[in-house]
Each structure stands twice: as C-alpha cells, then as structure tokens.
Length: 188
Image (cartoon, rainbow, N blue to C red; front, side, top):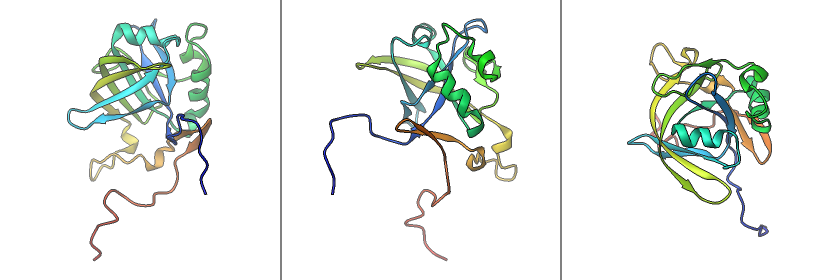
C-alpha cells in the first residue's frame, strides 16, 4: 500500500559533496551541496543547485567556476559543518582542517582529502525558485592515486568510504550488488 504526499524533493540518496569556489586563496570557500548531478556524458557536464542567500552564491556567480569534491566518512563532520556555517563568519578551511590545493583547470581550489575532485566552468545559471542551477562543463578530474588500480589504470572508489545524504542523514555507501550490465551478462 502507498500513501500520497505533497510534491517534494524525495529523490534520495544523493551525493553529499563539498563545492569549492573563489579566485584567490583569500576568498576560497567551500559549501556543502546535495542538489548535484550529471547532465551529459559528451561533452561532460554537471550541475549544482545553490540558494541565492548562501555566502558562496555571489562568488560562484562572479567567478563562474567551481570544483566538486566527493566526500568520505572521515570528512563527514567537516562536510556537515561546512553546510551549516557561513563562510561570511568563519574560515572554513581553518575550522574543518581540510587542505586546499590550487586548481589545475580553474581558479577554485580542490580539497586534498577528497578522493575525487571535478573542476567545472559554468555555462549558464538557471534561476528556478528556492535554488539556482549552475550548469557547467567538466574541465578536469583529479583523482587520489590511492584509488587508481595500477594494473588497469581504472578508478575504484569502493574503498574510499564515500558518503551520501538521505533525507537529513549521512550514510556510508555499502556493499556492491552488481555492476553495469550484470543483469544481461552471459554466464560462462
């Protein structure tokens, strides 16, 4: 049996990421974002959605660049803290103990502790209501070498303890139950 609820943001779980922005070390900031996703494979594109009243919003709007940093269980406290405290009032780098690294393709930093950082340039901003969607091209991806298989050169984040956000709670990703195409793969 199912019951009907009012329309709402019920697509969960979703990644809990730290988005970094700013052009200079003096203005570098981070913001926790859960409204995020992939838009296109070719060309690689993604989006983040941010409320205009957030401290990072005018930085994102002016710089038109950002970096998406995946988060892990060991980063969960910093991820939550950066989402409930404002960069207008705190130096989030100092307060969280996370380490900024200069971007390679964009001016915004990456987070050294993140297993994967995605450098993006905004193509356009769609004002949609409570949030604005920053639609962006992916310019570069920086992966922690601990999660690259040296024999296959493939990225494997299974052991990274990535976290997701699920209706107000953070969760570590769990057990693998299949891989793409496993339902139709021929048995040997």
